[in-house]
Length: 316
Image (cartoon, rainbow, N blue to C red; front, side):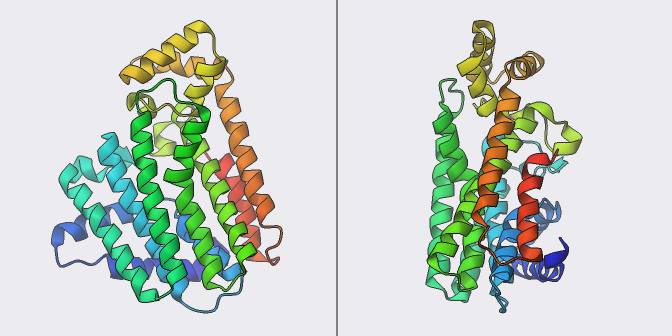
């Protein structure tokens, strides 16, 4: 993203510097997961909102790195909980280094993020990040409770998304506005942008698990079904599908049956579940776009508008 290219380079330098540990295995795993790349949407939100509101300091680089560390820690822990073997087109850290090492390095990243947070010395910043980290943990537990439960409602599913995924998007956008000195109304608009964009992203992720391919999305298609996750495509079939489709999906969620993935894929396609999921993502992205009408015009605002389009048009 050209508008923040120089800032992004600075963030990468901060990440490299702050990842260092005297324990070699920490360096090895942290470097492996960070170097896998990823979209870096969350740190990008910090940079775009800070710049859009005219920030002229350097704390946005540290905050962007902090947000990326928290996100990376959740990925390490997620992959252990989900027993995932592939992320971003590479073996997961737990597949390479084992579950124990992955969990502990995730803990290192969380605690390093909080060390960095303290050095910024802004109580509002610490409150936002502490609250976000706690809500994310709650979201992880909520998702665990929903596993293998075919009776999960759309509202329960959206509650998990808001906590587990959208909360860090929300925090990232808020942080950029806060350090730039935006007023409370502008900060809340940034938060709503992040919440809505994060929701759109997760909805498309859940859709791609039934309509993407492993090369594009960087993970095994059908992982959600194997893990017994009742995501929106399956919830829609349970609510609107034929009795046969509902029975198939119920059994597959309860047992984590990926052997019938092709039959489930046909059910989510024929029932209109994928179309409905995309419509919900498009609506969330439109809501995000509407929240930034008051941002000063320019490259940073344009980039935020473009992110709304990318969230729903991507194939990975």
